[in-house]
Image (tube, rainbow, N blue to C red; front, side):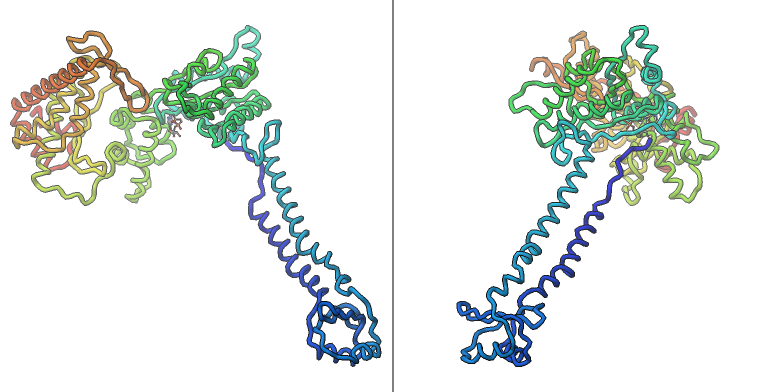
Length: 606
Ligand code: ADP
């Protein structure tokens, strides 16, 4: 889509005008004025001019002790000091000079004054006026227009254009698209809805984790329905001055109503839509802006063709007044894509790059479990960059697989030198994870194991792959997952009889899972179905807050430790029972550095 901007003269244009004015002033006006001014000469010159009868008028100024005179043509004024000279008057008289007073006044000090003081001021005031009028015009003046366009919404306006984003560009997200297709239909044919008495929602809230295509969906709605699209971020409303945000909201809605039917998109609406919690020293500006938004949304009748779309990652922090029916009546979840969605997104983005024939997107989609649309777009781009680096003219399967790892774990570290012993420990650690995972029937199989250090700091990793989509996890599956996470450390202990720092990330994850099982999933004997923790930030990392007594907290901690310990023991047992396979696989990995899931299973089942 094209952003429409009023043509604006570049700043250099104004500089050039100022420069020209200054040049004219300095080189033409000033010399002309200076010429008209008094020139100081010696008494000799004065005498000589008198003798040559080249004196026009003369004024002997006794008070200032000076003689002011002009030449015969009277186009230059001269000045000289007074010398005691009794014959002077007679000689002047003989030379035909005319005695007159106030010669200098005739050289017009007023003109000088005008030229050197008033004119420049007038010029600059003029330029100032002109520029401020320009800026005011740009801000498209209205009743609440402020100096230099403060308080004007800076919404970017996109109009319909042939290359606008369409629903087909947004892969996956079928539910969201279906929901929004209705809006498109309404914007195409509002009378159909009006006749039956149905009213369109005024506002639609798109919620979901970052990078899942919320902005894209909003643009696609505008692209499909061929209406103007106003886009603004929530933070753009918040200004330094109290009241500016509210003024911007007013202006945005005024513009939108003029252009109706149209779509107004407010990204990151939580920047202004946060709960008004009445804290002392709260954010006045934000609250005023929010109030204005609420008022505006109430203020326009339904079915007038203005549809407001807003996006946020933090729906739980929004003010309830904003999310009530009549304002944002609809909430459209835009979740992380599932396996099929990932494959489609990859395909959409892969259209832009040249591909080798053997590329299998289902494998890539499977490997990139949990990736958002933006990450998948990034994976395709990284793969293309890698192809260029390797002087190939097309992207291969290997490029895509490597770029997943780049996005997950960072680039391969070029000069990380592990000692032989370290490399062995890492190999055992990774095989420990993989072996425990493979031996527990419910665990997902291993896709790839590598001990090439990455820039993220990982010395190696085991990529596990879900065969399909998983929506529910049973207690056994979760326990197995914890056991798998402890498998790395278990292998180190079993073989080297010592622990290393390499397991810190595993420990963190295992603890998180175990804690969630006990406090949120009701999977402990003692607490039954009581929630001890609530998630406060669903789409951004999933922070939790505890809500229980100190004694219960202590009990939770005890149970978490116990749960992890039990799974650790289980992992120990599995590895002990398969010690020969562990050695064989670790040695194989140590030699090869990277092995695939197939190779792993072949050795395991041999
Ligand atoms: P959000 O607003 O949800 O944070 P965006 O809509 O800005 O995310 O998406 C960022 C980028 O990610 C898009 O420009 C696009 O390239 C890619 N993307 C995200 N989701 C999808 C999708 N469902 N289909 C295709 N591309 C997507």
